[in-house]
Image 1 (cartoon, one colour):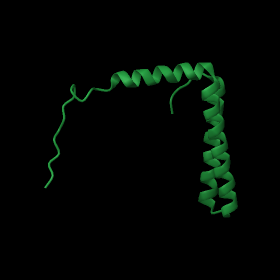
Image 2 (cartoon, one colour):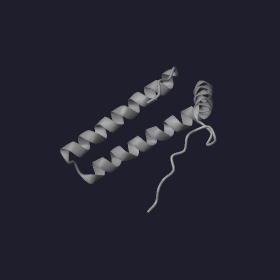
Image 3 (tube, helix red, strand yellow):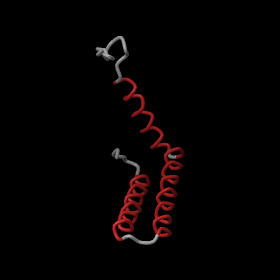
Image 4 (tube, helix red, strand yellow):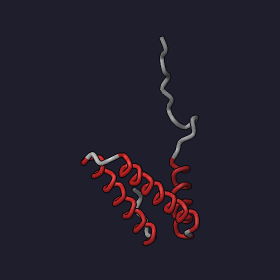
Amino acid sequence: MLASHCAQLKSLSTLLREKYDERNKIIARGYANTSLLKADLEIIRVQKIITRHRRRCPHCKLNESCLLSADARSRLLPSEGSVVPIQTF
């Protein structure tokens, strides 16, 4: 997971980690399917909250746009990189 300076995003990621831990415990103990379904729904709920936060938080938007632009610059163009031909038989 990427390091973030946004305190709210950090607390949400901690909550998500806790939900995954709860789900893993349910799987390990073999509880009923309804418990596993509830745990999965909680994980989805927290993921939606994180997505909504990242769209609205100005700090997270800025951080994400910086990461995307840095990633785009690090890629080589096809003409710049070496291409290894694939032999087909």
